[in-house]
Amino acid sequence: MIIQSIFKATLTITTLTLALAGSATADWSAGDSTLEPGTSITNLNANADKKAWTDNPSLKFDAWGHFGTWLSFNLTSTATTTVSATSTLTNAPAFTLYKTNGVYSGPDNPRVGPSSDVTGVYSDGIIHQFSQVAQAGGDGLRWASGVEGIIETLGYANSGNSHAANSFGQPVNAGANDVSIDNLYENGVTGSVGTNNGQNHATLILKDLAAGYYTIFVGGANASLTGGAIDVSVTAATPTPTATPTPTVSPTATLAPTVTPTPTVTPTATSTPTPTTTPTPTVTPTATVTPTVTVTPTITTTPTATPSPTLTPKTPVIKITPSSAATPGTEMSILFTQEAGVSYKLCYGLSAGDYSIGCLDATSPFNFSLSANLNLFGALKAIKGQENSAFSNELHIFAAENAVYDANSLLFKIQDVQVQNEHYTVQFLFQDNRFILKSAERLNSSVHNQPAEYDSATLNLKIPRAQVQEKYYKVTLHNIGDFKFQIEQQEEIR
Image 1: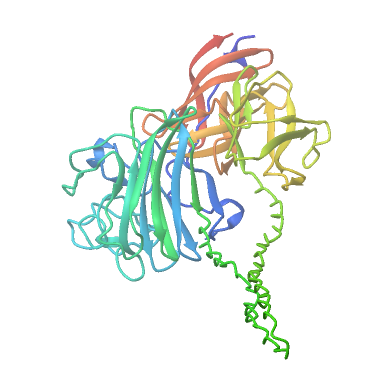
Image 2: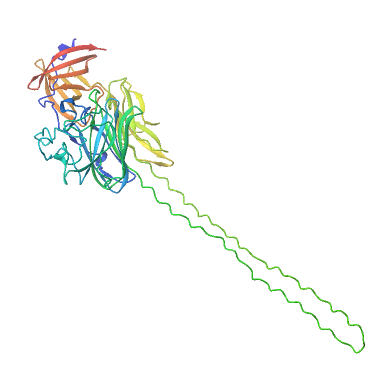
């Protein structure tokens, strides 16, 4: 049986048009945007676009407002703070950090300035393009500046491509850049960009960052790459306590009183009537008494040290690349941030919340090859001494095909279809030699390592691998309108 006779048509995502959705105002993991000294907040897969921050020549290398992601956080007290964006080698993360007066989600209600300030605003309030390097109130950022928005641009980190100028005539540099006006909100901005442990990263370190609200705009910065998940983390360092000096105690010497020597007494001679020779009186020499000096030694008492309590390690946050679901044989990696002096166990089981099958020692990255029929739930816990953290967020890891056609139900289901920067799960019904769109559900992120891709310009849906009974095909479907698709190209693989 050839695929034509089973498929006969094609997928489209559209009329939905699976066209573009707006820029994301994202939440932090567990919805916690409050940052206290000694803690971190993260957003896994905050953005995935390869040129949202810069490197889009059509926008003259401006930021692409509706494809980047905005993240806001509140630092509760002054602390040296590290902001970092990381991705696999398929993307080049970059971000800008702004000081704001409150929670600010950039594109929601842009105040459009002069025509030289912005080149277009979408009807839903999403800014089309702006300057990612401008200072608050400057060209390209005037629309977002003011007491209700951005009050100062502190810096930016770019691990991707640099440009001599964006459309506002401002240079877009690579590396970590301090663009703060003064040290009102921090005492210096440093950082780095580069590749470490198979990941690209962009990092800013803000010394003594003042308490208050801050906003991040993040996206990719290299259009030649394929794009991929960018994770963002913000960490506030624990303040170093000031040591109280120990007073020095001088030893005290105790002296016994000085003994006064007894004076020498000369006895008086006695005369007798007989003229006798008077004997020479005997003189008893005076004994010299040496004064005794008693020195009382000072006893220095060493205070008993109170043993430091063992701190419970932080609950880890884990992610998997390239995706939770993948075709058998895919090389998978579980990633997480490791603390010094802490070991980690990856525990797993057959159902959600049940990790009773076993646990493995784990370090990041934890690499493995996805075997056929694997379907497990897993989570990570941190161990320090006798203390264990709570389990991390849960991963559901399973081997599965992304696109499968069921000849009995005539349903063709695709778990992951990428439309520009968005992902959807779609289902088609094969009817009248067409695939008719039955349902479409938007996903938070990519869920498969081989997503189908819909091109809104050509109206083609490209499926790199589709299972039809026991065979596999590479298929292109064309949207002919009215939610109907037909097969345009097919090739049997494997």
